Figure 1 (cartoon, helix red, strand yellow):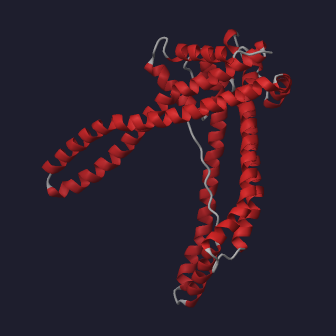
Figure 2 (figure 1 turned 120 degrees about the horizontal axis):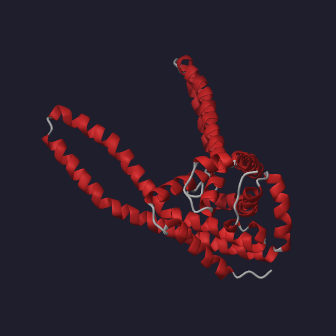
Length: 349
């Protein structure tokens, strides 16, 4: 099947204009921004982890010896024992919030898709209508997150253990760096392969399986069974689609950074005017009230300004999220006309 990707892109642009600009409705724009945010299409996640060194281990051992040698060791020991339950509690709370957001984003994926297909801005009705398929997608996303982190652990645990046991003291810095590089280089290659594999799986799930789940109101496993032959029959077209979407993602990332910079510039003047006004009020207040006013102003203005800044960034990036979702829907409609969601009256079964 020959696909004209320029036609797909042009059609996606036109439908994006229809959703957002014909006519322009600020309320609709804000609602769609919220839905896209909850679906996770307006957020960037990064993962950072630290590798403990042998020096930190030695410091820990030395600190333990000092604690044992000091007469206040008995007083400090209970505090150290309390730290473990606190850490466990924090980890549990973070994991609970992560699971909750994964569940919400899985459901809002279908809310966002429903609004785009129907050129609407609704939350309550599509949120309820897509409950079953949203829960099915949630289970898949939860499994993917678990598999991803388990894979990272299996991949990097040997590297961490090697660095932990290696003594770099007395070595030339260049030699130590070469030793670290020799160990980490193969792992970085494997890590890149892992990212590519998981990225492709996520792309197939979001761009192919989710529309089929939405169209036929079926679970993830059944939708995958229907998507697999479509992809296998159009491997080359899917590969080109992945390359085009990667290029679009790179361009959108650059555009998002430019938008953030412009938003900062646009907020500088209002912030300066507000700061001058607040400083004027500060000067006319009596000395005992100045400190209270300064603290109160910071507590109120900083969160408000931060919210306004983030809201402006999210709203300005909404066209990118809408376009990318439409682009995926237009592409799958070319591969399998049955899944042209823009021409179907979709009702829950």
